[in-house]
Image (cartoon, rainbow, N blue to C red; front, side, top):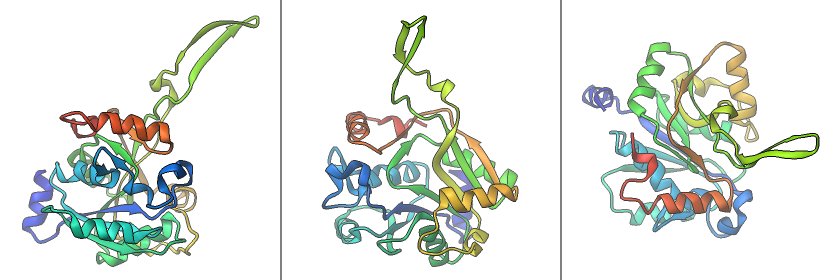
Length: 246
């Protein structure tokens, strides 16, 4: 990652903030005793796989914004043998994503940062994402992705089913894929503990013309349900999981 190496040479290393404080209620089978980003895919928690996406491309400085059962993350980081630089920040058990992000940006000294969720994986080219962000230089860049097909599509005529099968992912439109680049001024946004990034801060920034969209056509898969966790766990057994095929 040439740009990252240059910035490191100049003494400005871009950190990646990983949001890892939510309750994970939609996958409660796995999150009774641990936060969602600590759910295992094989023998590694999903947050490790998220960080691997960045580390494989040269970004190895991380701030994990924790909350719910943060002690599980803290203990895991203590035992992790890695060359990565990982800090765990307690952003509060009840904080929403907007609050966690502002706290994290202030914690790292109000620098440009990558931000992503601790429960979604994609082979996003971080170098291209950053280059795109710098070409627009708006306060926030969102990575737009195609949502994975979750339901079969049914077509009928006169009450008779004429087609039943998987929904075409290309027809599903674009959604927030959770790989962001944020400028320091995002930390100036007014937030409370209950402020959400997705439904409050991003719409505000969009209304001001301050958000750019980087389109990613490759692999992307969230882990919102046990079914999706099992899909990712199967992919994790590959020598090179899909989210590392840049």
